Length: 81
Figure 1 (tube, one colour):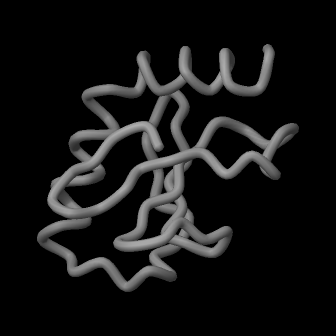
Figure 2: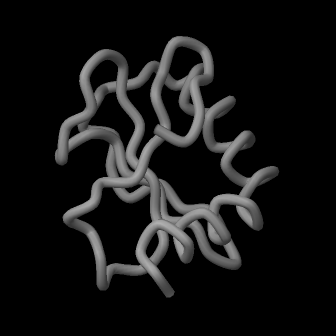
């Protein structure tokens, strides 16, 4: 788990090594198919399989955007890059 925000967990899925930097977001237990957000020069919603309501999703996207440098650093550390 990287962060908790608005009752959601923001995390990396360890099986995603080799993919571009991204986070998953869900409520409850983390799953591989949770909402996915790409984190690069731009923050881009890949999909919202967790069906996070738009108002919460917007806040989460803003948070990820504001913290993308730190998230990328954490990704590199987590995956040994």
